[in-house]
Structure formats: structure tokens, C-alpha cells
Image (cartoon, one colour):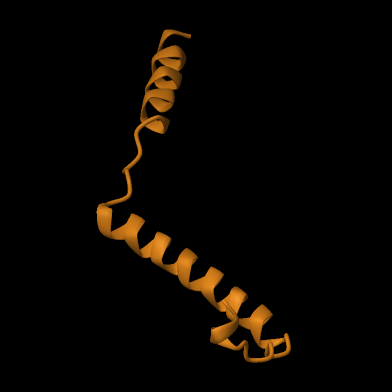
Length: 59
């Protein structure tokens, strides 16, 4: 019984230890997220008509 408790406590302690992502890994993930959002926005914009040119002298 005592060994099982120690083994279980050790497994619980090890499960809490995990490697934090490096700066490069976080940067790459954020960069890919931004690029995906930009592609989605570009795709939505491409599906719309081009607005008519506005005369700058009216402002």
C-alpha cells in the first residue's frame, strides 16, 4: 500500500511538470494564427465587389 501511494504521488508530481514552449515556438504559433486570419479576411474581401472610387475633392 505504501509503495502504491508513493508511486501515485510521484506520477502526479511528474504530470505537473511539462516543458513550457520556447519564445520561438510561441512566436511561430502566433505568426501562423495571424497569417490564417489574414488569409480569411482576404478571402472575404475578394468575394465582395470593388466600391466605386470616391472623389477626394468632396471632403
